[in-house]
Image 1 (cartoon, rainbow, N blue to C red):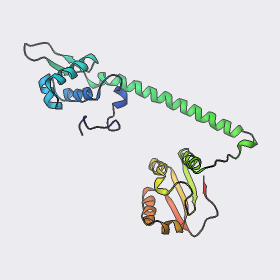
Image 2 (image 1 turned 135 degrees about the vertical axis):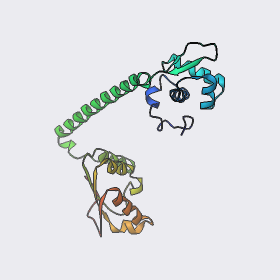
Image 3 (image 1 turned 60 degrees about the horizontal axis):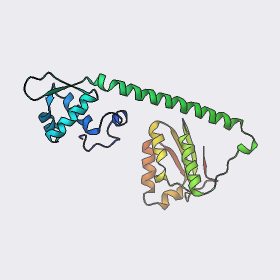
Image 4 (image 1 turned 180 degrees about the vertical axis):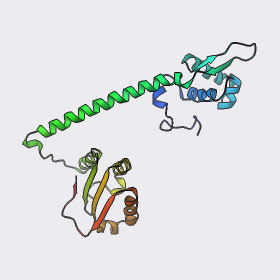
Length: 220
């Protein structure tokens, strides 16, 4: 996939270089890195732009420290790439520092939240939430906080979030969180793809069993 069609998710340097280098210039930099040296006409052919646009991209690369102009030998001006470890290394290191500080602050806030929760008074022991949207939000939030395991009783009919809408479950199972679920057999019989979905969950790593009836809906 070339840079013209890459989405921000596909581009590993999108967030790192957003403030300094345009996506087009980054694509040009890759083309310059792939050669010992290049000129505007050669780069234009490599990235499928006009010679004038290629010249502007080369100027941007030079200005931002990603390329250097070689000594003029009387022909077309040629350029060479600044080594990636120099051009990109600092920006990547800065981004890693930002993520590390954000993670430290997240851990600090999480610890504060847990401390307040444990020290809360009698009124804080049970929190009642009302409304389908709010319950669905907390259903996802409880799962998202899991580190090792999620256990659940799933009654039919589903109250707020169907299995095929519970995207957080797929993410957590993939991350190694253990899911142990008991569900009512009528769920498998009620949905045309119920058995297929059940088999897919088992294949993904969920531990699940179907029973005739459950006493309540519950998630731990």
